[in-house]
Image 1 (tube, rainbow over the protein chains, first blue to last red):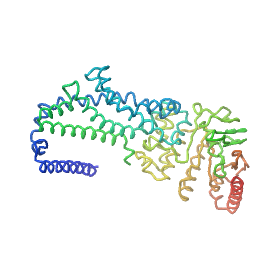
Image 2: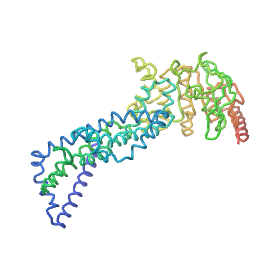
Image 3: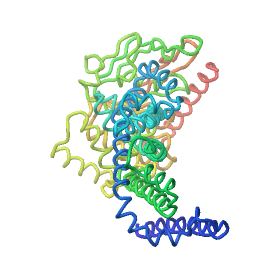
Length: 250
Length: 254
């Protein structure tokens, strides 16, 4: 176990070093203020984070959390229903297929008119984009369960809540976590865009504001913090997956 | 007791209606093992699914201990070909699963489970996951699950077919030992003639065909369960005779 942790840590360190080296090389080649050397950014990273970025990071994390939570609350039961009950899927699938490809970001002006320019429109935008990923992942996860898996339970007269508990939830957990992982990356990029309108808080706002103020040092600090936020969230999911899907690692 | 009268099962295919079973009748007396054998596609597994309550759209009559097939009311132990173990549950949870679903977990069951696991030699595997076990070990876990349930009837769909020859014979003996204690009315679907002759008190030979699978012959097998029986020339002659019959039915079917 300790050896495995060491390997993972080494892989992460290698990734960080590789990116820093690439950044350093680009900065040395370009020699422009728009690409400062990483050492300059990291020198003041702690201070800028504590003084300026922490509050923006907290806002962004809250929006990501709220948007994904809302998407799970709606998408999880919908995906289970569509995957398990073929009749429900027959009626709901066309709805999902018709609305899934619509670029939701194009709906942002309408959303802002209906839900205001505050928190709600940003959270709903994240919800709209990630809910489909969760629905489809859950539905496909259930469809992939072999029919034989249900037989011992059905022959015992198992109720739906027992099938849900003993088969549907654990069988779809890896798919669900993957969907959340993809949703998280999507949510961060969507959030960046939505935070450039109608707010003074959030990582998107901070980075764009620093860029407009031609403060490249703060802009890069924001980008690095955004990247570390991603690392933290993905790491959290990895730990969750290792705990909940222990059987998959065997 | 399991009674099947004039059972017919059809299902809709892409172009036409297919008949899986036609006019199937058989009776399995209380506390006996009935081995069902026949060529591939003769509807052996379909028959088992009807009795297990997994297929409800059928014609004819199926009665278990005098009543209708009702998985909710009855205790039906079903062992599918792939052992039916859930990969996300540990061995211990897999064994407990059937009892948990049927009537909850009790201290008495825990004590029985401990004894059963010791008997099956799987007491050290309880915290593992099924995919960490060999085929024989998975089979033992599956047997522990159904025997712990103390079912009214036990239905086994080619339970030993995925095992190598030596492990298969070993598992047949393990099953025999457990069954002799519990005396559960059992239907065992198999495609191994020797297995049917060794374990079944009654052997049902099924035949397939365009009009659906049906019972071709029902044989009493008085030598059932005797290990010495497997080494006799009579056992060998009987198995050859059965194989020839199945081969002939398979040829007719194709």
